[in-house]
Amino acid sequence: GESVGLHLPTLSVQEGDNSIINCAYSNSASDYFIWYKQESGKGPQFIIDIRSNMDKRQGQRVTVLLNKTVKHLSLQIAATQPGDSAVYFCAERSNQFYFGTGTSLTVIP
Amino acid sequence: GAVVSQHPSRVICKSGTSVKIECRSLDFQATTMFWYRQFPKKSLMLMATSNEGSKATYEQGVEKDKFLINHASLTLSTLTVTSAHPEDSSFYICSARGQGSSGELFFGEGSRLTVL
Image 1 (cartoon, each protein chain N blue to C red):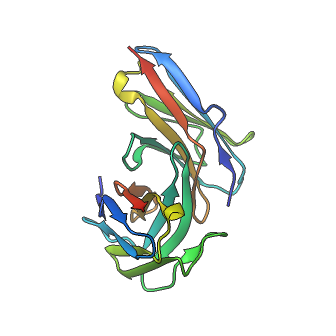
Image 2 (image 1 turned 30 degrees about the horizontal axis):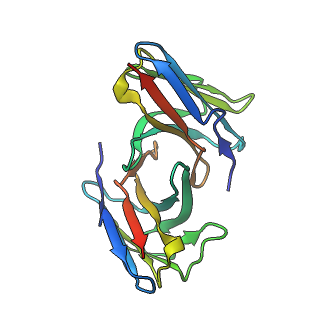
């Protein structure tokens, strides 16, 4: 399978601060990327996606940045809340969807 | 958004028995479904890609005879863990690809399999 990995396995942030979660991918042919959030014991939930012809996309409190030159993807969460505590995965699509290692985000009240 | 239902959510079985897990797309048709396996504090590992009406495509290292996948209709894919052993205990998650150009994946809630 393809290599899709995250730089940091854990991240702790204070409530109200911004969070940045990073992801590296290796398949330059991937054309579509998704960030997912997974809470304990549940399936992944879609957060935001971005196509390879874009370098930035914004959602509600979240922004995804794509740097194709260095094959890097990041997820920014503004004003992080306790409910944001979860594991975050990036996934890339070539013919299948492959997931990165995951970053566990803990929000400190 | 689209809904994917997975059943059962938890199953405990004895070693040597077979277990079937169902994945249903409730409000859309899914020509492609994916099965993942997840170990504690680990990422999702793609096991196989299931296409409606054809044989599943398995990832390297995944035993086809061990993990039987059937995608008989556009709304249902099943994963059968045959002759389960304790090492098969895991969290199994299915997903279905939405229609249209986005190809977004919608996930089931997962099935926790415990083999005694």
